[in-house]
Length: 196
Image (cartoon, rainbow, N blue to C red; front, side, top):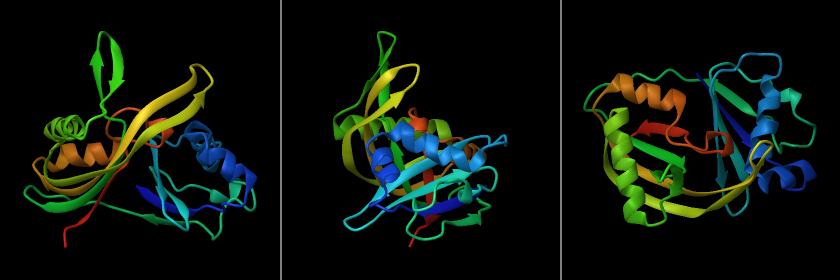
């Protein structure tokens, strides 16, 4: 598994266009995998007061040179990561997700923080972890245009906190495959780090 960090150039018109449309951002990222079978590619836009960067997780090493000159402020960095998880291990986590529930055959966004935390706890039960602490922030509607569906609006939230590993194999699969829906729009990437 590879993790790449991309620091975006806010003056670049392609970057400005992609930041306004999550699905187009996904299409730009996928240029780094042209001619390959990349498997699951997950990404998350990290925003800050001075810089926008993207974390990209992929099964194969991406070729960032395939993306237009001027798109990045600095040369993208890529490193190989091998997770060794064990039962009972306590870790920090970050997840940008589209917390939803199906009602009447349709997927609906969960707008209240209590519902979002309950959704995360359910996902933890399925994916081999127990949420110990969580801070929910950056809640907003994201807009993207998918060729088949037209404009797509989804409610997204970022979860930061601590978890305990209950099933290492299930949690590793969740990291590799992502959690929840809207992965092509920058959701689902679960990042883990040692608890301090």
